[in-house]
Length: 65
Image (cartoon, rainbow, N blue to C red):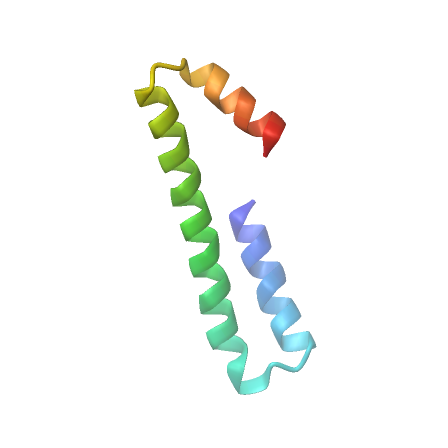
């Protein structure tokens, strides 16, 4: 999923005419995706550390986004 989003971001950057800034935009978007993934992992681990079962944590986070 992440690779698809990165590919779409790359294509969009070139299409909208980001020109010389396209690479910088792509790097910024990749970093945001990485940070989001780390944040989600930290959230899951925090809730597990509180004593909630992993399956219920994942289910609750998917329901409430």
